[in-house]
Amino acid sequence: MTQYPSSPHSSVRNGSPTPTRSASTGRHLQLIPLHQTTMPAATSTETIALSEKRVVVHPLVLLSAVDHYNRSAKGTKKRVVGVLLGQNNESVVNVANSFAVPFEEDEKDPSVWFLDHNYVESMNDMFKKINAREKLIGWYHSGPRLRASDIQINEVFKKYTPNPVLVVIDVQPKVGLPTESYFSVDEIRDDGSSTSRTFVHVPSSVEAEEAEEIGVEHLLRDIKDNAVGTLATRITQQLHSLQGLQSRLEEIATYLQKVVNGELPVNHPILGSLQDIFNLLPNLSSPATALGVAEPGQNDSCASQHSELSRSLLVKTNDQLMCVYISSLIRAVLALHDLIDNKIQNRQLNGEDIDGEVEKKLDEGLKDAGEKKADDADEAVKEGPPKGGLI
Image (cartoon, rainbow, N blue to C red):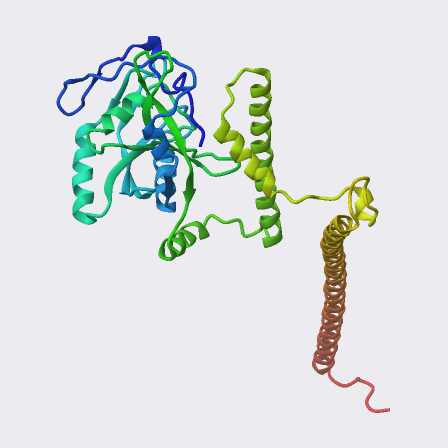
């Protein structure tokens, strides 16, 4: 579990709260004082309880958030805000539905923002009549990261639910999951100073039931590019996955380097999680063991296992490359076949045109000859027999 510092994303400028006017009653909401601090050294009981929570986001929520952004803030730097509906259990927060909320904020001063409370309450009442199981459990915004006013907005949503969840939905993701989930907790300090609120990151995932998968598939069917084949789609997905893995590895390397340099404190839970990841990695062999030769200090059984693994990987790679090579040959043969067919069709069309012109000219010649003979016969009849009589 990664705990983010309250500054700059979860604190108010100058460390003092800014009263926010309510849209429904016009009253000022008194917020908890916030101070810019570093990562807390101690861990609260609330943080430990949140370490076992995870957030499940359904595809309908993602589609609604993207539609909300396209309608309201597409092509701008603004973000959109909405309400999340679902169930908040002990270990799993199930986000099943959502609706958009009118929201405005000052681009120059992030502490100035407006949220329509009346709209939230009326929409929440209507959704309760439709499905009583879907309760207001939190809110979302289009991010793509936390902002300074998020703590204030989160405190407002505590009016409707005790511990609201914040889901930051990246409407234009490049790699990885488009969601990041957070809960607000009290930050504990070692010096005994006053506590403040900060966000704690919790793991999130995108899951769907069978009926939802069918509905989403039908919705996305019209926007698929039919010109792109299945192989190209799979390769693109694998490329995005590898890019996401590369970015995660770079983040891990950057974090470890900062810990070594003393820029960040040592966090034993994070180091334990990294060690668990490293333990899952296969013990790949070196080129020497790939040939069945044991390295110094390595027994023959270990060398044989490494040799078998390397040989299996090489065979798998060679088979895949052979499939790609054969598919390229087939594609070239089909292209040549189409080219030959086009040549044959062009020649046939040209030959048919020549034959048609010849037949047309012959018909015209025969017709002219027949008309000429008929004219000669008519003239002979008109002139009559020769005057000299019969010879």
